[in-house]
Image (cartoon, rainbow, N blue to C red; front, side, top):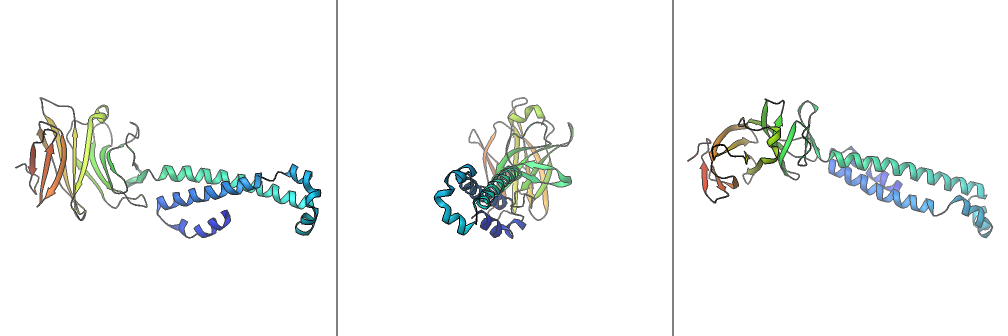
Length: 256
């Protein structure tokens, strides 16, 4: 079964589909475990002990016990070697599925809290769809980002946008974001804010992005309460705060 799986998966492994490759590796890992168990079920010492009981079978199938022992030993070594290879591949594919490969060889984590040493800090991840967060090029040059998540883990949507100056590594725990898009997933809004108030106000950054044309605008607003949800209706973005108060942005990013 293991060799059959390898043969059946040859063409599929040329695919750029990272989740598919992980599933294939896991399937092969399961079948090689069965092979390993079968190989270990017949130790060489048992062949020596029971050879007389199966003399007819051994003679007609393997000619002599030494050939059978050599075959079993080879099968055990093959299974152990393949187990190690598949274990490495599953770990490698599992790690790869959680990263987007972006410009200049950089990678963006698809899991929250990847560590403060990472330039890209995701604040929201919509599995297999989109992710948004902060990009710390250095301690001064900080921008927001929106990436589309694809099966190849190479984004089909990649936009950066200016943000308010108040974002720092030390305030990441208080930084939040969410993504809103239209029904056709052609128009996107990233709403990004920090829960720390300055003079009883929160600064919220809202970026409007077109899939075809890129960034339309990125504006900053002072509000009383953190945004809780947003809807895009008739060209306007309606944002509802935790206090249930609503504020509306027109198509040009102006608050009404």
